[in-house]
Image 1 (tube, one colour):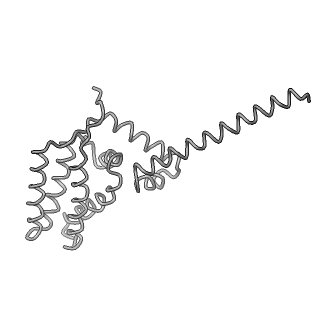
Image 2 (image 1 turned 90 degrees about the horizontal axis):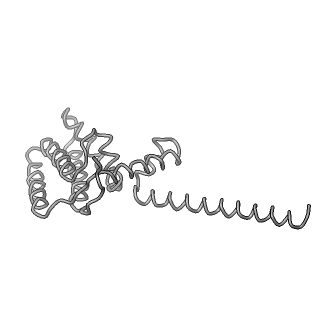
Image 3 (image 1 turned 45 degrees about the horizontal axis):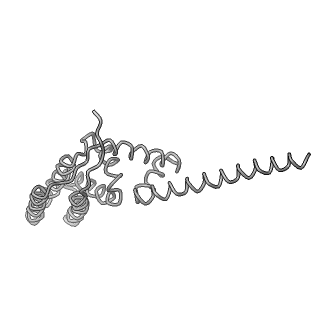
Length: 186
């Protein structure tokens, strides 16, 4: 082989290696961004799909869908009304814990609708919330589980109290999250 040919082959190999290293770095950076953005929901998606690649595609799809939604902040007066309603629900807990948990669930659902989250079923709601509220979704899932138990009167007062705390975590997160997003296309 001539010296010129060796240099060309070496240059091609160097370009391939640099491309591979750059691609790997971009992929690692994207994975870190997804992990940071989705929090525990990232690992939940990996477990549900069975692979990191499939999970990352799923999370990318959630982000794309979320970008299409018209999520809006809660205006100041409405924010105060929501806060007052939450306080009444907390007071109700003393005498009627099951009813308070039910009312907390309904208030959180109302807040989501008012913010612009579509009501397309439980699983879709969780996927939509995961984009901006992934770090509190475990709290919401736990609250929903106790809520389901409470309809059959099988939840303890301590579990109901925990559900109220979990609903409060998501409620506060939703109420505080105020930047409008998306450009909903009709």
